[in-house]
Amino acid sequence: MLRRPGLLSAFARLTSRNQAPHPAVSAQRLSFPAMFGRSRAHAAQTARARRIRAAAGRDREGTEAGLSPWGPPVGTVDLPRREGAAQRRRRPLQLRRFIGVTVALVLVLTVVGSLLLWLRVSAFNQKISSAPMASTALFGPLGGSARVNVLMIGYSGEAKHGGTYLADSLNILSINPATNQTTVIPIPRDLWIQGLREMPRGGKVNEAFADGWSAGGWKEAGKVQAAVVSQVTGLPIQHWVSIDFAGLSAIVDAVGGVTVNNPRAFKYTWWEDTYHAQRWTSSFAKGTLHLNGDQALTYARVRYTSVSAESSDFARSVRQERVLAALREKLGSGVGSMEPGLAIMDALGNHLKTDLSAFDLFLLSGHMHADRRLELKLGTVLAAGRNSAGSYILFPAAAKTLGDYGPLRRFLSTELAKPIPTPKPTASPTAAG
Image (cartoon, rainbow, N blue to C red):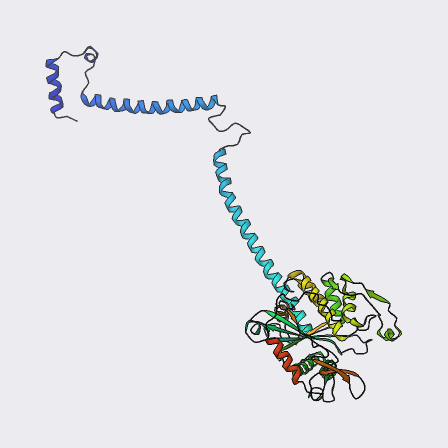
């Protein structure tokens, strides 16, 4: 291919005239394009040489460090930095998996535990209550302003005992939700009842429970007893709770016993038919006593003792309050605490009867403290006498006739309206005597 002469050729001729050729160039005359192409090749070879030399230098350094250019020495770990990064990436993933599994396991155990607890409480509720498990009869009233009155009934329940279903003790828990204070009102079991539809033939107040049981079992027993006490006292009894002797003993054992302060020593007999023979086979010492279930039951139950001050119905009701106060103190803030709560449910399953649900009993347990005790004292509030059969009875002191409960109702209404004085009564009240 022919090249047309251009500026570069002219420039070459011009320089050849004015200058003598360089000795190094005279042997071989090169055109500018040839020189330019050679320069590019030389530059490329030079860059390639630099890369080769750099790689060779790295190889020498690796060889001197004991590394082979074909890979790590046998028995060594390759790429430790890269493997550490992988481990670091795996650790958060493993941690997230562990946390996820743990949370899921906790949720499953919580759901299963709650279900088992619900089933256990539901079975307990079916045994002891006439109310459905979901009933919240006390939830609203305990948050209101009107008084809530619950009748607590203690009875023998023993076939060997002459009065199996006679109420052995009657106590009204009168709760003032506005002040969160509870007044305990013991009702003497010898209080005479006359002129009421529930007991048309008359009788002592504790016979109402037995009459109701004969008519319709435990559900009717509590209902009749509550109705009679309500009419006599003038206080609306909204609910009732009953427990037999074995139940009281069981609940005391369930919490590990109770401690009471006994103000005076007295002797008693295990068999009340030996009372008249003065056979005092057992005794309670003065001072601090730690009682198990059977001992607490006896302490709260005995009526005939070697000391006259401890042989009245009033003295016995005070001892009962001591045991209940000690039991409340042992329970602390209520039976809702898991460990004592479940133990108490197991202990009371066959001994407690009520028209409250298990949930309502939990609410009530937080109000079973005695901020005040209203005594129906003999000689001021009540008077003693005999009925037509010659039995010892009590009746309102200012009553015009048997069956006149107006004075008793007015007394309770007046006293409950008064603020509870401070300091609060001690947890272990003493009987007058």
